[in-house]
Image (cartoon, rainbow, N blue to C red; front, side, top):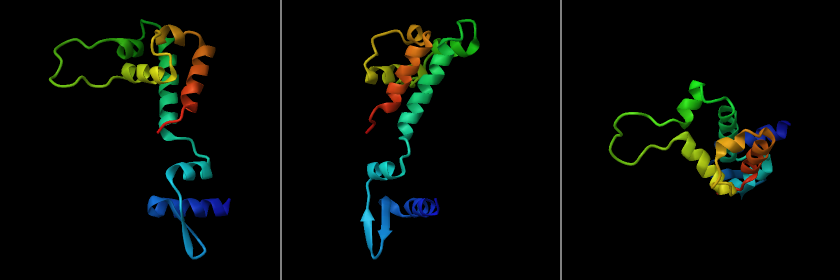
Length: 128
């Protein structure tokens, strides 16, 4: 435990993942550092938690304000330029990466077991 904590401090303080071993320094890339410390990829964690939360909201019902905010469209005039990225757009993108982009995600989220397996697939994806 003590050695791991010390190695972690060295990695955090040293740029580009250099770990001193004796008089030479071993250079490790990010993927090797993640494998060494077995920490999950932060992008995968964010995507899986976003998907988990979206499933929770989809099962709430149409009368809840959280559901209406997630799937509703704002009224009024849109500002100039590219439209802002919404949560629903991110969820659809994550589903397309998994291969389920063609289906209605709100209907899919009603079945908890199937949605849970989908969230697990998103968590296990390899993110560049």
